[in-house]
Image 1 (cartoon, rainbow, N blue to C red):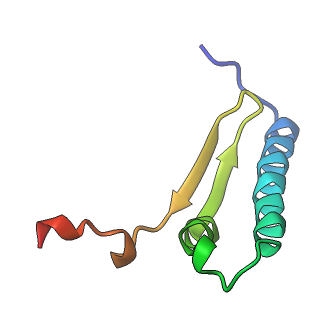
Image 2 (cartoon, helix red, strand yellow; image 1 turned 90 degrees about the vertical axis):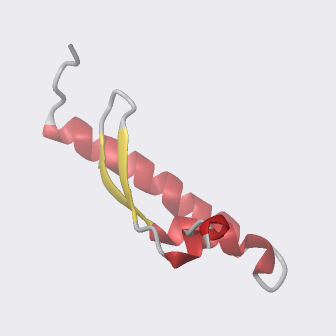
Length: 75
């Protein structure tokens, strides 16, 4: 059984995960080139929405799957 965490602990965990996402965007902005080299990563990371995180290491994300991620083999 997982012990429940306090609201403050959950807020700290969410802030830590959000900090990782923010750091990614800062690092990605420094990648040279016209952006083609990082389009997939940026598209994924721009679509990720942090829903929740817990101090035990759990993270819940929301990610909208669009046609860009469709399996074209089934056509």
